[in-house]
Amino acid sequence: DAGVIQSPRHEVTEMGQEVTLRCKPISGHDYLFWYRQTMMRGLELLIYFNNNVPIDDSGMPEDRFSAKMPNASFSTLKIQPSEPRDSAVYFCAISRRGAGGYTFGSGTRLTVV
Amino acid sequence: KNEVEQSPQNLTAQEGEFITINCSYSVGISALHWLQQHPGGGIVSLFMLSSGKKKHGRLIATINIQEKHSSLHITASHPRDSAVYICAVVSGGGADGLTFGKGTHLIIQP
Image (cartoon, each protein chain N blue to C red):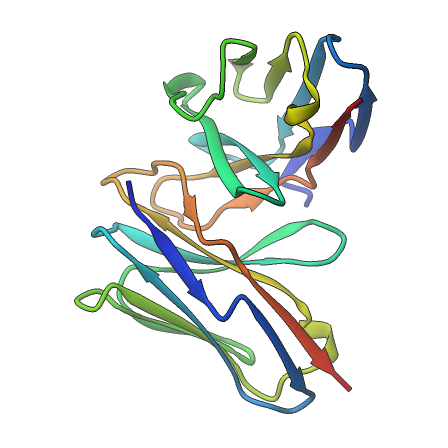
């Protein structure tokens, strides 16, 4: 989707390595969300930002996960150290208050071996 | 925490059939979303509802706030409608994050 660009599309890493997932919102937004999708648990909210400020990070699984949004055009989700159970597809999504609807990025498929 | 239940989990139908996917939730919401995820993995937002009914092409979404229930209908289904359809709700008063159902895997056979 042209509204949100995620990179990389695929990432394979070894257990214990640091992984950084990137999200670049292109269209206007007030909110940015990080979601994770697994076969077992489906889609889950990890964290979201309002005007670049983290609002709710209660979905972040552990201290190994951290997210930043230094400006309106960029956000990162970092896992350090990574574990095999972190293998999932990670989606970034944006929304605008009053406009309704969400725009999702194409996702990053992470495999930790 | 809001519990979102979808039914059926899997649905296979013939081209041209009328399709209904159901979603129920446990706690009052500010909005409900229907999303579509194709085999390639991308997620597209189909509808956002807070009341009543919306229509887009062959897709119709309805919501009954009192019953805490929503339905997604597809008329004159086509193989290209084959996808996973996901119901998601926003529980808070603002743009809180979505809580998702497990999705309905729809296959339309020619």
